[in-house]
Image: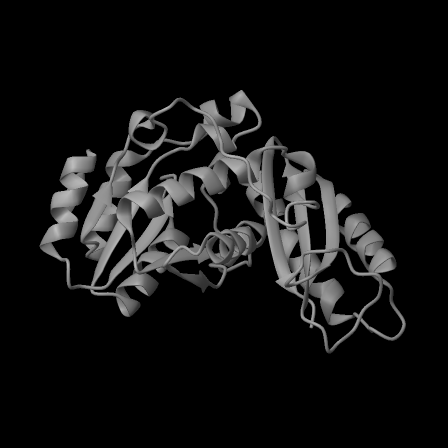
Length: 281
């Protein structure tokens, strides 16, 4: 596996496989099986796969979250090599932000209005800035994004369509632990007790969905019941539970089984913030 640390090395590596279909998997490191599943999806669709590892400062709202983000680079490189990844791109801030650490301005057409956009101002601008910079440098044929960050995935699709980036955005299903917890780099910061409680996020949302009657329930009563169930878990404190249209990400006024929709949740489990989402219908 090639390690690419400069724009010149990236250009050389790309020129060597000019005729081959290139898949791209952007990450911030601290890789787990969920990330590796994205790599495998890219490998199944493309001739060559490039993974980036870069912790992007402009998408963090709190300096302490950036400081606490785990750094497991050596383990990450070994895992990617074992997976048969073709190359890993390890840029620095000067490569991605030649004019300084500042995010672009975007119009996400309401996709950022709720959920993560409410409590993390500037997060999606920072994310979209670095992703489009990667697209500009790498020019991949396809890029893989996981559905755990469903709102991020929706925004990337919108930016790609609006700015006409010639890249196919490929969604990947959420990878879960055997007990249902969505795989996340943040999970390694949970204590053993919190890790047990964290599994209840999926379990209790799934239980609520299984009992959902779209004719008798309203989104508001469903969300209230989910919040109550999750807050009953000792180490969990709910930030939000919201039912939204799967395409527009606007909150639902009423349930409609013929309409693609999802429930989104963010909680504090101890000192660790976790998110998840599941389809409703």
